Length: 161
Picture (tube, rainbow, N blue to C red):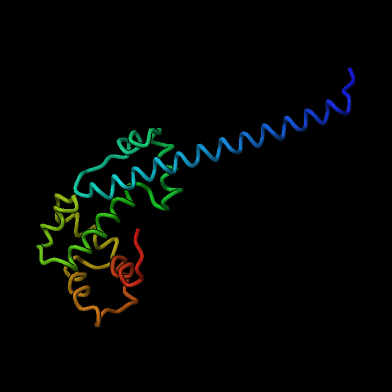
C-alpha cells in the first residue's frame, strides 16, 4: 500500500489542525477553571466570619476536591485554607488599625470562636500579637519597616492578598 505525497500533506495538515484545536480547548478549560476559582475567592472574601470546608469550596467550583486544591494553589499561590487564614488576619489587621473593638470582638468578626487560636494564627502570620500589632499600627511614624508583620508591610506597600 502506497501513500501519495498529497495524502501525506493532508494527514500532516489534519494533525496540526487537531493539535491547534486541542490547545484552544485546553486554554478554554483553563480559563473556565480560573473563573471558578475567582468565584470561590470572592465567596471567601465575603464570608470571613463563617467556617469553610475545602470540599464545599470544591463543590462550589464544580471540581473534585483534589483538582480544586491543585488549581487553587496554582492560581493563588497558597492552599485554600492558608489563603482563607490570611484573608481573615488581613481583615483583623484592618479592624485593629481602624477601630477600638476588643481583640475578642475582632476575633469573632473574622470567624474565630476561640480567641487563643486567633492569637496563635495572628502571631504565626504577622510575628506579632494582635495587641502588639495595634500599638504599632496606630503609631506609623515609629513603625520599623523591617518588622515581620505581613499586614503592616502590605499596608505600607499598598499590596493586597
